Length: 92
Image (cartoon, rainbow, N blue to C red; front, side, top):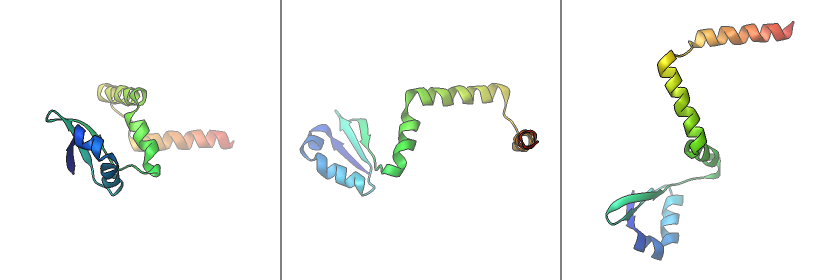
């Protein structure tokens, strides 16, 4: 992991991008405080990254977690039984 200030990042942006492409995280600091990060990202991970960081999607996940905490969840065995019943009805 590398830490780089904004001035150095401006001067050597391609160098730090190359480091990220090789798998190294680069933390950008301004006035001694972390402000952003350059992380390795490939095409296969892009969709996951976008979903994980999309505000509306994150809000939906947080709402689901809140509901789970208040009401509890569904046991996997019950979910499987419900799915099997639903498939059986469709097969008739």
